[in-house]
Length: 162
Image 1 (cartoon, one colour):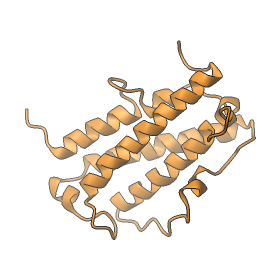
Image 2 (tube, rainbow, N blue to C red; image 1 turned 90 degrees about the vertical axis):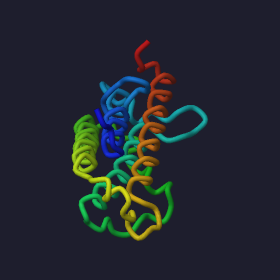
Image 3 (spheres, one colour; image 1 turned 90 degrees about the horizontal axis):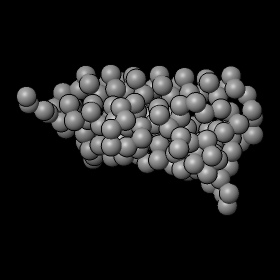
């Protein structure tokens, strides 16, 4: 069986979103969270789960747009601006909508990655000198990193599995 770079990126995407093998994927880290848990701020400061998910969704939506050949528009001025939102609402419906958006983006990203060719991976990412393949590889580490942060926050809350 031959494995190419696209196959590896799809596997990496599966592992960072829903396939729990070596790491806790994002979907597992978020499973069963309530709005109350999502707005809880860690002692000593830091972002909430909700803010972290907003940040993930912001960048993932931009990557999805680029993979679909759509200009994602102007970037925010600072990374901190991507962690916006709901530092204090206990709105379960709003939280469910955020999680639904996360899932939609993740599934569409997987589909977009799976449709790439080896040549597509060598193409420039947006207006940068970076290739799409290199950008995707780095970005998946970003999602894995934040999934780990969410697990840590849930452990601090006592809401993570034992």
